[in-house]
Image (cartoon, rainbow, N blue to C red; front, side, top):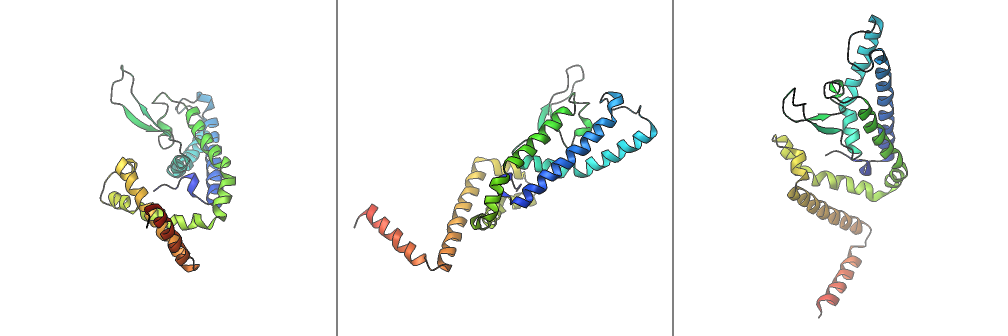
Length: 217
């Protein structure tokens, strides 16, 4: 289960903003080193520049998977379908702008699209800072986290058995199952809190009164 930007506390929001900023800075430095070749992936740079390019490339590779998850957590997809030109031939396949960044030239896509996706994701998290503070200070937010974890447990089992977790969780029945489990766990959680506060008897009496009013004597 990927924690999206609406379900994380303020320190995680800030961490993701920082991680995106560092990645954009590293990518900019990498792109600038390629300027003599006008962003064509060639070996015409000097030996020192080549070593620096290799170092930047290693740094980008180390972070690209984590950054891809952060971008997807902002409800932004870095993936697009690419079809080779007819003269080249081949099948349509999916390309991830982040994890496949070093293959973008072969796909006919420059680094601009990658920068756009990264900056858009950073903007989503930056605009959510105020809401993240409200979530972090809200005790019910913390109650909901284990409830969500339990509701996603069937899909974790699907992944453990080798199934497609994303497809299962995004299907109609998957969403229905997850919603039902979350509703049940939420009700049980609030009832437990009400019992600890001594309010369970009052709630039971209130719902019985409403039920009798609706159904009749």
